[in-house]
Amino acid sequence: MKSLIVIMTLLFLLGFQSCGNEEEQFQLIELETTGVSLKLQNNAVSLYGEISPAENELTFVAVGKNANLGFLSEFQIGDEFYYFNKDEYENPNQSIAVSGKWGHIELIKSDPYTTRIIISENKSPSDREFVLRFGSVYTTAWVTIIQKGTITDNPIDDIKWDNIVYNQLSANEIFIGSQYLGIQNWDCIGNPPQIYPSAVFPETTFAKSFDKEVNEAKRPISLYTDFSNPFVSTIKQPSGVAYQHFVKDLIKSEEYESNKQPHLHLYRLANISSVENLSKIFPDNGKLAKSLEGRR
Image 1 (cartoon, rainbow, N blue to C red):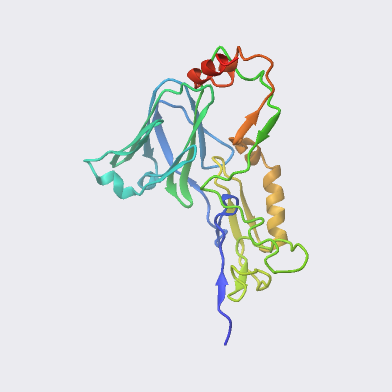
Image 2 (cartoon, helix red, strand yellow; image 1 turned 180 degrees about the vertical axis):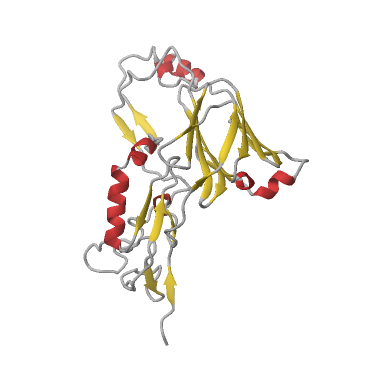
């Protein structure tokens, strides 16, 4: 009996997605906006805008030939992710789709698709990033909104951290680089298996050892990242080596450089000779700073 072949598409690798039809082309959903001015980025479907730290009201109206697909499908602020479908615009009794300390989103109407987002005042010195996706698949618009932080009199730029510790992945991230490391039960440390988009494995090794791959010809695949300005590339002859070349090109790309963000840390340590300016370290928690200053 022939072994059942399991085709694995790893959509979670670096946020990549693949498609077998290289002839597909991305099409932008045009948006008329109020409250923010959007600029088209290097990628054909990415838009970018900046707003002030004050409370903002932004409106997005889908126009043009792709307006019928101009509904809000995804929204991200920090570690919060929300997903929507076009039917949610048809409920007149509940226009507020989601809300949080950052503000709320209203799905106003579907003809044309109209979306409003109320963004609360940003009292933090750090910028806030909002990512909205309209439409789906190849007809889409990725919108990145940066709300500037509030400038304070006590910036922490002059604080030098002696140790920064970060060893935790977000709940929305999956790292498989060492998940199956040495799973072959070899006496020595085994190398991680060659897992990549469009890789095919027999059922006997799938999610067990991944030590045998079906080396048959594969159709070309298109890969793109989930950056606000996606990096897009086509691998004509998919293989582990070809995928590694894709990753190398990705790391060297402008899209990758512009998407790099500083990570939050579990904790940070610094040797401070004076406690008089702890408010610089805790700009959002003045009570804690004053409490520590009082324990000299």
